[in-house]
Amino acid sequence: MKILLIHNQYTSKSVSGENIVFNQEYKDLQAKLGKENVLKYEVSNDNAKKLEVLLSILFSKIHYKNVKKIIEENNIDIVHIHNFYPMLTPSIFQAAKKSGAKVVHTLHNYRLWCLSGILYRNDIGICELCVSKKFSLFSIKNRCYRNSLVQSAVAQFSFWYYNITKVFDNIDYYFVLTDFQKKKVEAFGLDSKKIFLKPNGIGKIKNNNVEKIGYIFVGRLEASKGIIKLLDIWMSLDLKYVLTVIGTGELEIFLKEKYKKNNIIFVGKCSKERTLESISKSKYLVQPSLLYETFGLTILEAMSCGTPVIGFNIGTRKDFIIDKVNGFLADEINLKEVLIKSLVTKDYEMLSASALKTAKKFELDYIINKQVDIYHSILESNKNEK
Image (tube, rainbow, N blue to C red; front, side, top):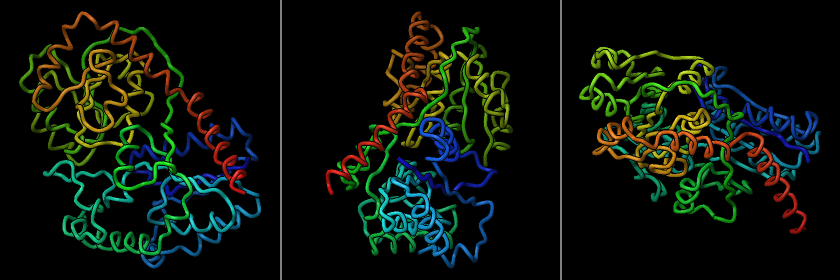
């Protein structure tokens, strides 16, 4: 079995979970199947030239030819695509299909239905206006792609073209990351027979048994991540409730100026290692994202440290957090109440142990074995079809 992994990397300046997952899968699959059996083809938005991207946005002849050549010269069985937009374009789906490979696409976001990819608009909240409309103009009007009218118009017209020309029909199977996401895309019309549930994986579980103090937030500092709602609540809490905020973003300066209190500590951007160390020393991770999200990597990383998670009962959170078992589920109205309860609970040791148990289900070794099993089942079904 020979696999070709493909990804349009986001810029190096952005913290992209998709980039992390792609790089990790490439490394793990090579270790599992052998370096000669797992190849990759990737481009980076760091190298994107606006005019070139614009001229090839509907169909990239260069990447079509390059991918087709790699598949045919290396007898690739499965082409697994992560992100394809904007540089690669769906031309790579067609190249893979015409070369006789099976085509798999991981849905890291909801961009096939929503231009922003997150089904969310600032000041509005969850938004599914465009999902049921074949030619919606809402995405352009609301500048849903990179908050730009021009870029939104270009992106929307390109996706209309993709759908009209049915290029996504070249995809044989989709990987989704959670049961919530699976049900969501099925509701959007994706054939359930073409969907595999394959979550992302996390590293080896390490329970260091360190003393845990305080609460921690890890994420981009933007409204959609719920950081403003969280800090509003924190301003009304007693000083014994200490919150460490790790991350950077468009709101960083504003937040530091508005929320000045001794029990709110802004750390800024940290390395992966330092972030995990800080999480492992925290009593709880708070995940107040207002988005559906497609996965919960930070949640699982916290649980892998024996740190229970407090999260809003939105989207994927219920796939990981079991209320009062490995953390707490809350809503915007009762979050303060839940935070107060979390500090005095007598069941903390049980919560921590259950968090570790949950994380074990997502260890990389197990997940990569599951992924390889899915690949084999895809090839087996292909043989049966023939």
